Amino acid sequence: MKKNVLIVGVIVTLILLLDQIIKIYVKTNFEPSLGANSGTPVIGDWFVMEYIENQGMAFGTTFGHSIWHKLALSIFRIIAIGLICYYWFKQAKLDAPRGFLICLGLVLAGATGNLIDSMFYDFIFPIDPCLPWNHLDPETLGCTEPMRNQGFLLGNVVDMFKFHAYWPQWMPWLGGKEVFPAIWNLADASISVGVIVIFIRQRKYFPRNKSEQSTAEDTSLNKDIKSESESN
Image (cartoon, rainbow, N blue to C red; front, top):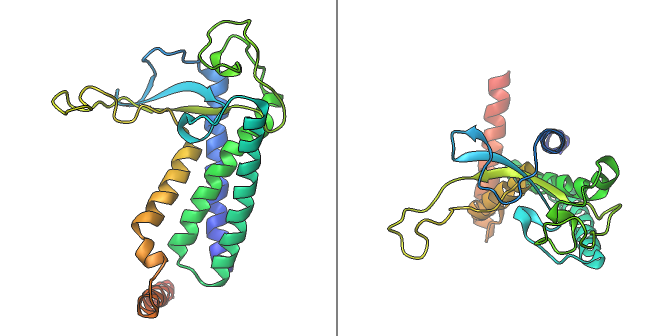
């Protein structure tokens, strides 16, 4: 268990550090994107960095714009993080597969990364009243509309990565539209990777019967033995 705690702890710490470094760099060096289809290329023209903020959940999904909506979302994140930690240690004591524990760690890192934005960014960075994501109505573009509530647990989440990829024109309904229009951050990606891998490998992580569980445990044991023999 100690080894799993160390491995997952290092992964979570690295993701959190990199997530916050990227967000702070973007906030201090990039101009806000106000709807123009532009961005700074990362890999060719199809993967770019485009600075926006959102008051909601992963990938800019909104939950509402009142103070109670924002507080509810932040409190939900705190509760979810606590439950993930509890579940992680419970599974670690039961010798759950390391891959499963790493996936839970990815989800934990992502949820924590976005929570940090909401907790502290309103105190660290100045708030521009002319940016639409700082208004109660995010569709507004002026400087005089009612400002969003500010303070602890009320900050925006910073997003910056975007795919400029489009479906072929010949495809019905989807032709010419963006494959993935949302702008996201490393924390969102960490959550998504963790959930997707758990879904793909659910038969290994959640064996339906004792025979499958025994097979999974034998496979894990053989790998550990092989790893130890190679290290010796």
